[in-house]
Amino acid sequence: MSEETHLTEAAEQEALPAPAASKKKKILIAASALLLTAGGAGAFLFMGGDEVRAEEEAATDSVEVGFVEVPPMVVNLRTSGGQPRFLKVHFLIVPTSASKKTEIEAKLPLIIDRFQPFLRELRPEDLSGSAAVYRIKEEMMVRAGKIVGDAAIRDILIQDLVEK
Image (cartoon, rainbow, N blue to C red; front, side):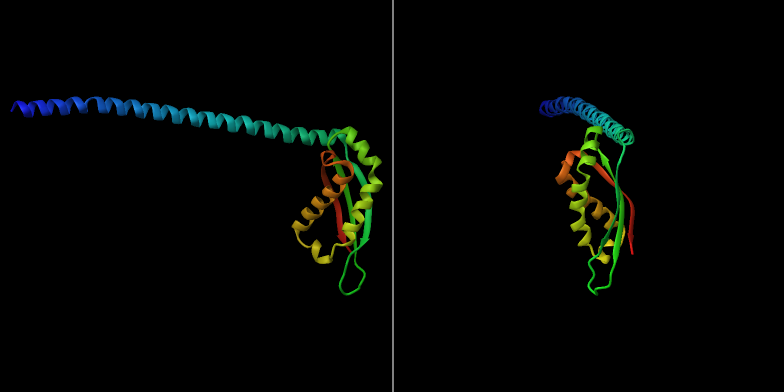
């Protein structure tokens, strides 16, 4: 019988520290999870706030800097049947700063010259859908960026894109 009591006492002693250790582990895990969650939420809010502020500042800067208006362009479209088709494009260039605006205005003839071959290679089917406008804007930004540098142009705003 003494062996049985000895075994039960040993089992009780082993059983007592285990719940205390598991409680400590649970508290540590919960505290760690809470800290990680709070830290992640704080970082998200902190980063998100900067992003929103940057977008607001960019919009304000665009208005303060102004736009470079490009005269309307009319180009022939490439057609397979030989019938004449035209594209009329009118857009604005949004510079990143006032100094870049003067640089863009000074190099505007070169920029227009860079756009001409691209626009003349377009086909009527290249102009269908809203994705077409996005692709044309991107191509125009790339071509203008080669003249004045990618950091000089924030955006291109298409005012008219009419196929005749």
